[in-house]
Length: 294
Image (cartoon, rainbow, N blue to C red; front, side, top):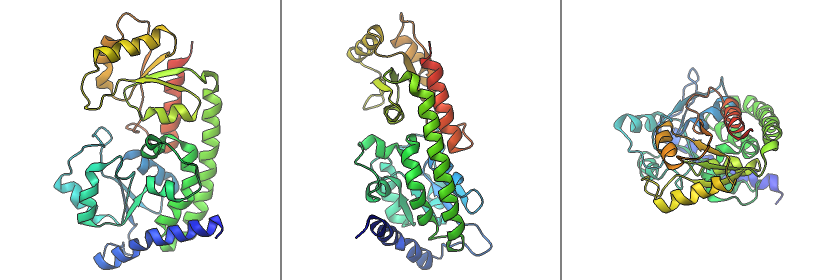
């Protein structure tokens, strides 16, 4: 079967549950209401806003500052899940805390990481790229048409508009990807130390190097051995920038790298302050460029 046919069959087989859930649980929006789409993280909400700014009621489950790996859902969060026509998340590899609630609530679900793997449009990617997928706009551009096809299952009257908007939005993201590549080209091969390993997805995509992470398995303090190793990266010139995703880590970073001339930048990895996906990615590139420049 041709690739296009496989993708079409995948979309329909994966998302027929949406129609069934809507009918069985009476969750579909009335003709006078916009379909309600709930997102686990703000970057995913920004992507949906870019695809369908007028057609959907796009809402957010998690505030950006909350820990997406181990957050405990509140009663109000469960109510949001029940009221959603479609829930979009990254998947169980990243958001473990949602697996059980999603089984009990049984909302219609779109899993970004699964969509990426099953689409067959992209080569095999590393696990961190699947779970931090929004940090690669090139991949997002390729997935936008499939996202539009999924959303059209809860908004069939908007199918044509969504399809047309998907083509335009994908083109916008491809142009954004090329613009960011040109902007960061001068820093290719240069190293960055960060407090969040997910930033490596963005760095790798644009030819930069992740020289080490302040992140620990249990979110505790960096060991003396690791601190020595990270400082060595600065001494050897393998790292020129320290990029933080949490401003609360600034004091620790300054202490770990005391005695070194260093540039530290706080990046907005989760789009806390971004009003669009384009703004999120543009600001991230600007923040890293400013930190790496001479």
